[in-house]
Length: 399
Image (tube, rainbow, N blue to C red; front, side):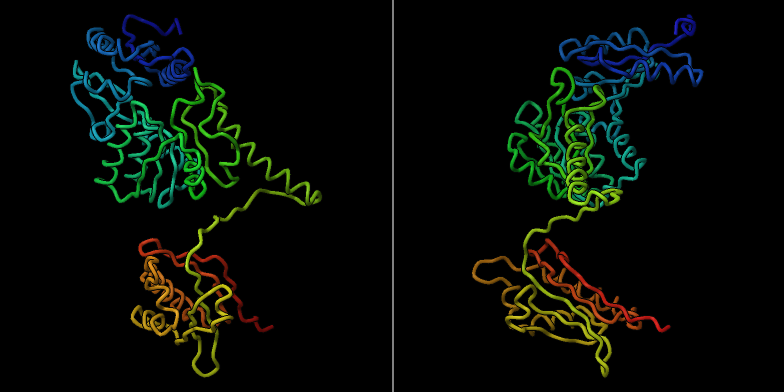
C-alpha cells in the first residue's frame, strides 16, 4: 500500500468501537487498488463520548467521508449537516459523505442486506421474518424489509437503551408500510421460539457473537431452528458465529438421522413443510357428475365429514355469492359465524378459496377427475385459510 500513498491521496475513515478486528480496511483498500482510486481507508476507534470531536476532525481534515459502525450509528446524525430520507426514517447513519464541507449521512445496511438475500436466491417478500436487534443495522434492515414488501415481522430486543428505538421503529413501519410488525422481549425465549417457528427467515442483527460476546448466541440451542429456515447473521468477524454453527448443526442432525434410518438412500437435501396451527376444519372437494359435470363440495372437514355428513354441492364455476350460499346452507354454519364466544371464522377467505378452486376445476374439467382438500383450516376473521392435506386424481390418458 505504501507505494500508492502520495500527496494527493485522500482519506476515508471508519469510526467505531471496538474496531481493530474489522476487515473493512483491507477490503476497501484492495478495492481502491483494483479500481485505480487514489484513496486510503483507515479504522479509528471512536466511542459515543469522542464521536462529536471525531466528526469535527473529519470536517477539519477534509476526509472524503467515513463509515460508521457500532456504537455510533444511531448517535452520529446529530453532528451532521443533512440526512438522506432513508437515514431520517431509520434514525441511523452508517456512511458520511463530505461534499465541500457539507456532511451528509446515509444508511446502506438495509439496502445491502436485502440485495444480498436476492443475490443468493432468497425471496422474503410477502413472507414472515423474525429479527433480533434494535440498533443501527437492525433498524435499517427492518425498515428496508418492510418497505420492500415483507408481509410480517417479529422484532426482538432486550429491554436496554435501544428498546425505545425499537418502539419508534414499530410505529414508523406501521405508519409507512403495510407490514404487520410486533415487538417482543428477547429474554422471552419461549416467544422467540414460537415466532421463529413460522418464519421464513431469522435474522440476527445484535452484537452477540462478536467481541466481547464472541462464542455466544441469541438462541439457547438448535431446537429453535429447522432445516428449511433461512438464518442470517450481520456479524462478520468471526465469519462463523455461534448462531451459524447452530444452524449448520440443526441441518446436519436431520441428515444424520435420515441416513441412520435409511443408510442406502441417496439424500440430496431436505424438503420441509410448515406446521399449521389448528383451525376450524373444513373440506372442499370436487367430483365429476355424469349429468351436471364437475361439482364442488363443501362441508365440515376432518372426521366430521363422516360423522355429521353435512355438506353442500354446486356445479362449477361459481361466484362469491353462490359460495356463501353454500356455506349458509350447512347445518354447521353457526360454527363458522361465531358460536359460544368463539370468534367468527374468515368466511371471506373461505369463499374466495372456493371460487378459485371452482375456476381451476372448470378450466381443468377435461383432465381433473377428483379433488379432495381435507382438512382445510379456516382461521379467525382476517387470518385466512390453509390447506393441510390435498389429493388430486387425474383422468388416465388414452393409449
